Amino acid sequence: MMLLLRPGVGAPRGHDGTPIEKPTERLNFLVESLEKSRTKIIIPTPALSEVLVRVVPAEAEKLVEHINAKAIFRIESFDARAAIEVAAMTRNGTDGGKRPAKRDEVSTYAKLKYDRQIVAIALVTKASAIYSDDGGIRAIGTRAGIKVIGLADLELPAEDAQLKLKLDGTPEAHDGSKIEPQPAAVSIESNTVESVLGDSPGN
Image (cartoon, rainbow, N blue to C red; front, top):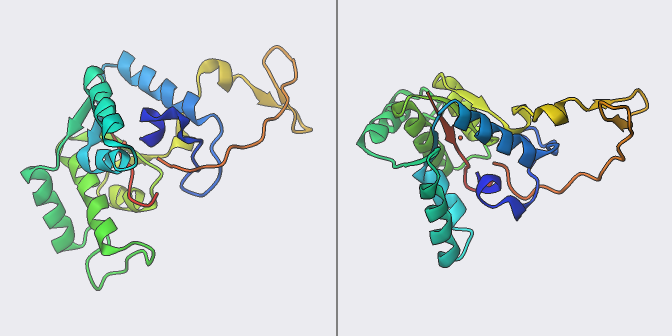
């Protein structure tokens, strides 16, 4: 979500750590496709807060105004319905987080609760998918029966999809002209009927 709201932050890596090719083009094409199909993109308030905490207050206000000005976006709060879902996840251990059930060692319990909140919002809004490269959200969302899609899994626009690699590894456009390879950008942020954009702390 950081890349969507602040394109200049840099190119992210996928959930496997691999640099993602043409991340901005993939994300813009997703938004355009969802707009055409009149699909809402839900931004959970827990994920939004993670974006806003990284900017000064004045810029945070502008980002929220930008989101509210776009019909395709809808900010969704962590409400009583979502709280019930998180309680069920915690009580039943449906996401693998219940003690003493096995949990990702790198995940703090605070982050686990944060990830559950994002997935719970997706559940109560009946989202068709969560867009995130966060491993915790991917695991919890998958166990909850929600498709989790990473940035690298997004389609490229037709003109980019027509590019192909020659056997020697040199990119070639559909008209046969060569394209010089560019160095991969360093990732500083990875990235959610309706779709949910989800980021997680420390990602």
